[in-house]
Length: 95
Image (tube, rainbow, N blue to C red):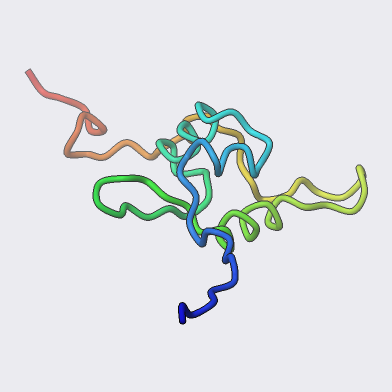
């Protein structure tokens, strides 16, 4: 007799499936990952995967109840301003 296992939804989604879950393009989700503005992800065997709980938590950070509410904390998928490091040209160079 074979044990009966109920069908369990996947715990992790690859980039394409995670993007569909969020109603984003895969490229937009990749940009969020690159710029550090997206949901938490993991690398399993060299593959990027997203936990469904992390995707839901990321969308909740951007939720608002009214157009007059301050913007949610989910940032757009673009590079964020960084503080120049003195070791990499942030300080004036002398010739």
